[in-house]
Image (cartoon, rainbow, N blue to C red; front, side):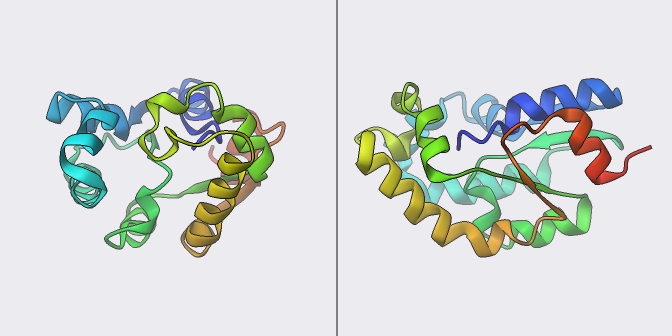
Length: 159
């Protein structure tokens, strides 16, 4: 959350003339609810199952940049599926940087709604500890500070 996946993904897709797909948007379109609404109505476990189904069942063009939710890699062997079907980038940022980016939009993110300041940073630190082993499976681990679409293209060596 807050690493810039969607923004950077859109720029990379435009640069490469690839299609951009935001899986969170695909999921919201499918259920006709926002992710926050879905979380409230059905809970995180149901959301994670649906998220994995959307990942696997979405038809992808040959050349696409896909943005996923930050928790997606950590459930239902999703990183294995991603690795078998494409290449992945982990945009790595410090908990403080992520908290600064997320502070204003907490209401839209179900896991952050009641957190701010130090409690937000602590929550992010905990989530990163839980998720790091999954994120570390990415093909590319990139420092998110100053990361551009051009740099990602170079890291992925896309011609």
